[in-house]
Length: 75
Image (tube, rainbow, N blue to C red; front, side, top):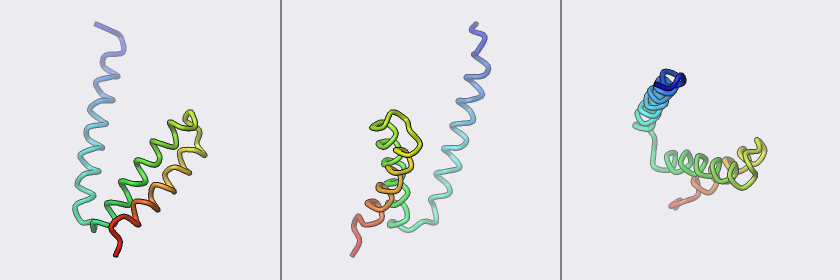
């Protein structure tokens, strides 16, 4: 057995728990709020990828993605 196996198992369990809690947090959100959150998440990932993981790129991507997500389907 690999020596990091317990750590990997605990990390995986923690990530699943956090994901489950995050999903329940969205239950009371409006569609526009959900779009904003999704846009910010996608923007952060895109910004991190495009800038090699820089903090500025990640935060900038999250900000731009959040604005775009907020404006989607806005009437």
